Length: 422
Image (cartoon, rainbow, N blue to C red):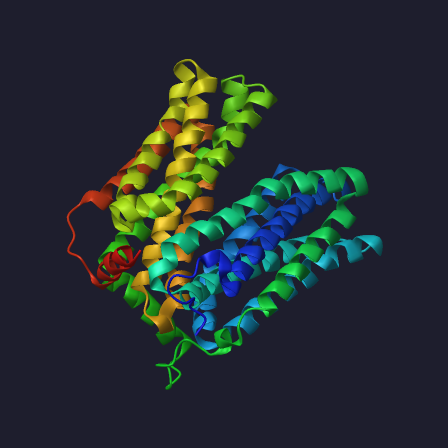
């Protein structure tokens, strides 16, 4: 077992510290890679808006669609080996780009393939880590552990783009991608140092080795059976649908319609990062005080309501209203995400952690590009403000559905026990 003894702080539990280090290194690598790939496409292959959007979509959609299958793998195979292999393959895939560029053989199909493979491996790693965390820290410490891991990941998300921009400016896109590969290599070494106990497959009950379709159905059945998990997943999909549309229109709307200067636009994003950090700091104590389920019920509608500040900015005072949006939305969505992930891990049986994570991740992630593409298409016909209002309404209604009465299920009982233990 890798669970820390009672009373030992998580920061003194070596396997958990390794997971935090992995989150930081991996996040830096992914941020550098994402920025350098787009800049390479623009500068070397003369990418237009459509080409850049295809690269973005390919880093997102294949991995989201394949997340349930990644969950089957996480439950059936040696988990530490899967995590290390996924990270090492990501380093190889990304590293092929600067090599092809140096040889003068860089092509669009190559870049598209790297974007798709890298995105798929990223989401495979995400599912595997969600399956690993309960085995590392135990049920009683999941809320605190998820908060800490989100913090470690946020460090990379804040510092990664800046590091990528500096590297591209100083040494160019090729060496910057090589630096991204180095971050993946560090991540793989950290994962390799995880306890060997994680190499014991979690799905001990799968002795009959059901077909992949049957294995997927087992994970889907858990989501259906655990009513609160099902409702959180549905509400999260609606929130992501609305936020995807808002995110797709935000820069264009803020600069062209509201006339925000670049530094003010950047300030709104900076405040979102600050709100995320604050959300990480308060999520554990807030979740312990009100319970993880109630935390999602509070923060879901709050995140949806915050989106109305974006179209409201067209009426006046755009800069303060957009700052308010980023502050409230960043705080609410961070606490929501940490609480939902914790409840999902509590609801899933030990042998089904990967499959449950894969199913919920697929549902949540697929709605983001759908919202972005749909919002962009509708805004071209109807204008930005009506679409922003409709997107906020979808998000708010989705979050509000969590307040409909529901009986406590097995996952919520486990969550209540975990809250008491904390």
